[in-house]
Image (cartoon, rainbow, N blue to C red):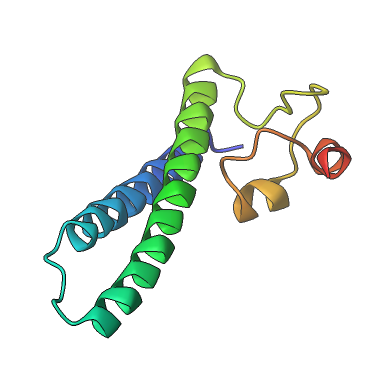
Length: 107
């Protein structure tokens, strides 16, 4: 397994999310429209942006944990059972800490 390729993928994804989170912060900090109907719509949009922000923050935490596993030499090994995580799974979700079986057990 090419852990350096995954490290680069993870770092790239983290940079994308950080850029998106900065845009969300900028949008949330903008001035409000004085029109009450527009303000109501902006409030709904802000809720969506905040949810995207939470999802992005959670993904960054998962990416940071995966990057730590790369540094520790345990990347690609399930943190629950110790089996190898399939390449196909890592390609789909490179920050996953679980093999397919253990991930299915969590749901």
